[in-house]
Image 1 (cartoon, rainbow, N blue to C red):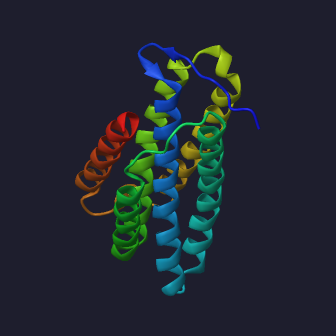
Image 2 (cartoon, one colour):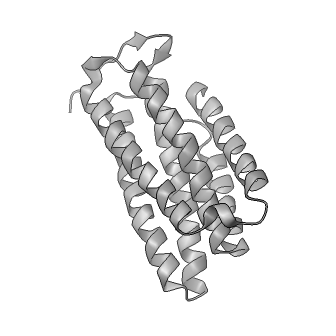
Length: 181
């Protein structure tokens, strides 16, 4: 397959966008995969099935950005191993803390991703309409995940504001690093 070229725009490169989006979706896969495993071990079919659905969507998102990086011959972030460990740890801890914390984690992550994807849609040039269309679709699915977290009482977790602030900060810091390296 012929490698595609890319251009720079508004001081942001396509490489940065694809790299950070892949890293974020990769981390989401790690979070949900771990949460699913915890709830399966606890014999909580309702939550393991709910999270499995979200996991499957995140896997599609991750695969898409992985293919885009390969098509454009661009590198992954060097932090994938770190994000794997931290995201899996977040998934494990939030699930072990209980259903509301698993959902609080989802709300916090997806709110950051909504803002992140919205910003990218304003930055991307129309010559990348296929990528923009995918980001629009993925953003809507991320918002569904957030809404599911709200519906399943994530905002009722004790200390929700503090917990979601910590998770949000971690996501924003990971975005900052993954955009650059």
